[in-house]
Amino acid sequence: MLTDDSLESYFDVTTSQGNGCGPQLHATTASQKTLKQRIFEFVRSNGQAARTDVCRALDISPGSATTLTADLIENGFLREVAGAPRESGRGRPPVALEVIPEANYVIGIKLSDQHSTAVLADFAGNMVADCTISHRSSRRETPELLDDIGTLMDTLLQQSDKTLDDVRAAGIGVSGIADHDTGVILWSPFLKLRNVALGPAFTERFRLPVYIDNDANMLTLAELWFGAGRRMENFAVVTIEHGVGMGMVVNNQLYRGAQGMGLELGHTKVQLDGALCRCGQRGCLEAYLADYALAREAATALGRPLDTDQSPQDMLENLFTQAKSGNKAAQTIFNRAGRFLSLGLSNVIQLFDPPLIILSGERMQYDYLYGQEVIAEMQALTLSAGRTPCKVETHAWGDLIWARGASALALSALTDTLFAKEVVVA
Picture 1 (cartoon, rainbow, N blue to C red):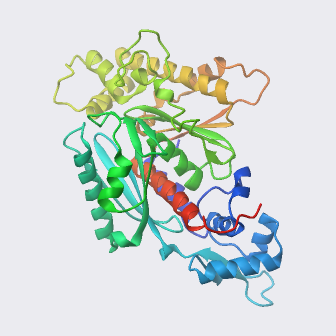
Picture 2 (cartoon, rainbow, N blue to C red; picture 1 turned 120 degrees about the vertical axis):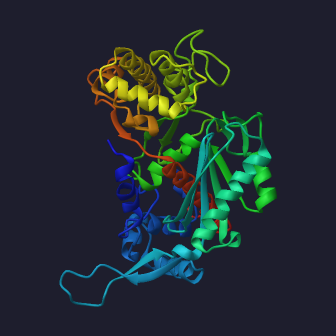
């Protein structure tokens, strides 16, 4: 299992030592992009690349590569740098291309009920600054939400000695159901109202393009751009924190569904007339796995009322300690949650047949949720006899990685915008 202790080395290796960021496999939709954009994204995904590498990877002539990379250099997107030395030590020193990091900056934000996190990233995907703020109120209205966003952005800019004029776009991940196309949050546990037009309100206040999506999609983008999914065409991410979410990559691209709101795994039903979910319905998977669900059970197991001064986080930590110490009631709570997770994961496998599922989120520090028994029951619930079983990995990240995924959303959208006026080459 990967934990926060190894977070920096695991994710930052992709944006250091010339390893780049972004998907390293090319989706079929790449043909819809201009050749110039495809060259730029190839260089960024590799960190550094020689023109001969570009020719081989994109199957273009040396003349086209020379002309288009010269244009990218002239426009301030790429620059020439010394490449790796030749083994023989003879001949002209090799020349490579790399993205100019300071050409553009974006901000990525993860909004949540207890605390929110933000990062400032450069055009090469490097994280320049980060910050976190806590919230006094778990349920907020739009003006208060915009104030929180403003505080995050101001802190990032102060840390990096930048101004808002240096920032070209922002990405925001929110828990709940968000319409990516319109920037409207249909429902979120930390908002007092439904159908909140956060995108338009953000643009009106900050005069900056913004792209909003479900936070599970942001974590999936983080894996696609910086983590285990960079060299995979298809994979799924299941998150367990304050809620239960899911993101999925199909053909190297984030899958959102017909209306941009698919893959709400946490609100699939696992029990008719079951436990009450915070969405208002009963029997949702989230109602058996999320923080509030486990805290509700913990209050009973530990003999404490739900209105205790102890926070849900502290109560869960105490519950986990009790389970590790042999408390049967505490163990039963985690084991039951693990069985519901097995059921949810088996449904994901049965529906989508991914080669890899990444389990992520703060609750994955509880090994009862990803132990051998959970994975074995997941496999037993799927019709996978005679086939290669779906691989399951566990990454227990904190909120910083979700915000980095939001920065990838902004980087991707900004890149599309910058190259939108070019002639498309099929």
